[in-house]
Length: 317
Image (cartoon, rainbow, N blue to C red; front, side, top):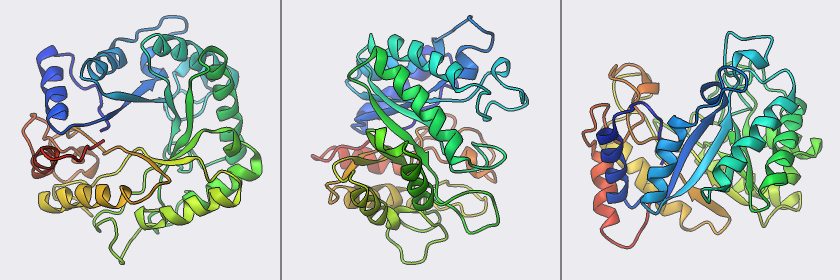
């Protein structure tokens, strides 16, 4: 389950993790946001990410850390934290410090950047060679201080059939192999959204969504990486009234059906849902409504379904 730090209130955080424990969540995905941790050079504050990581570990959950985003002092474009740093070595230095910090807690799994195949998270347009340099720099730095580290190519987003600079996951991954960066990763992370369709519905508006994952793994096999896992590090559907939003019942069905299918794929890594709690209260804004909990902490049908299913033997991530 992806969890964002939105409240410093101890009771609220404890309630969130108690809810995940009831769902038998096994993996928690947490941002290690460089722009938040080191907004001013050499002044680091790990409070937000530590609060989530420490609670996850206390509940016996494993942690996947997302190493991403850029403080203004590292870039000539300080208007956005989504632009890459001017110098990959600066990102690598932070990666090294972060790996030391969390290896001491027994956390060794890293997703390097978020959706680098999109213009949204790699503005103004995805650059395979640029991301390859960033990944190599970060991977080398992390492995220098943590030989146990598992490093994933940053979660690849599907494309949505609209004119953008985004590159579909298979094309992007093929280019990353040609670049030589994909081979040094320990696995590939994907975000194979399909909403408003269910995971296996024939009608899909995305390229690189859930139904396309077997073909993505076939590409890895062709490149000699068939033993590496495809990690689904974000998957879910937004409720509300926005474009492509789904009903609460369909949100629950989306999560449960995905779990059933992933359990049949021996090449799949963890399935990590997006996300625990809504990011806001505007029903028309889809980015605010992916949670299985509402912003006030109350349960949607998806949360109830996960808890009910968890009373059996199946575990959810």
